[in-house]
Image (tube, rainbow, N blue to C red; front, side, top):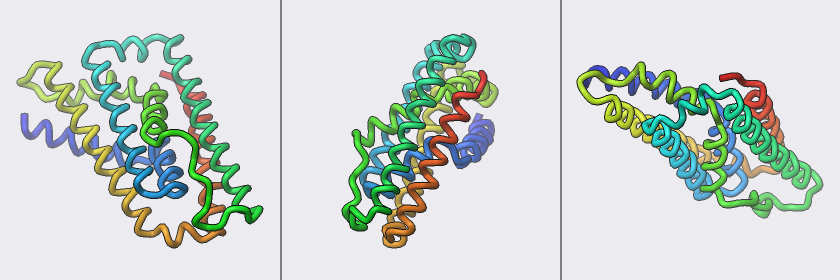
Length: 207
């Protein structure tokens, strides 16, 4: 069982480090509002994973993974939300270019950062497909399926929290660089385009 958990942890670690919508949302929040907001966003994302995990263990996420209608509703809501965050980032870059706020006075993004992370994660139907499709294949033998899935969900949530939390702290160390007006404008534009791109990708995705 220990060896199986070790292998599963390695697979989950690799998948966690692949850039995706969560990392783009965290980047936007951390660079615009600072590392405390970035960490709160990570907390919301982690909470979203735990919600998906609870639904998976209860068997409800399988409904979303197999229902075309439910999947479409959630993915479109998620796509719109990511696109809105992307547009906000692009608007911040326009304000910065116009010279209105000074480097340290850029307007903070609207909304609670924890809620932003939670919603962006809950509106990602790929998590449901991932938890109902891949996670069962990694579950260790010798324990009940519910316990095995619960362990994997907790491991994945912990890895996500550590990875994104560490990423936020790295951004904080380099914030003096990112606070330069030209760098801030470029970062907001890139982040905005990436978020909109992920929104389009989610909207076009299939179960």
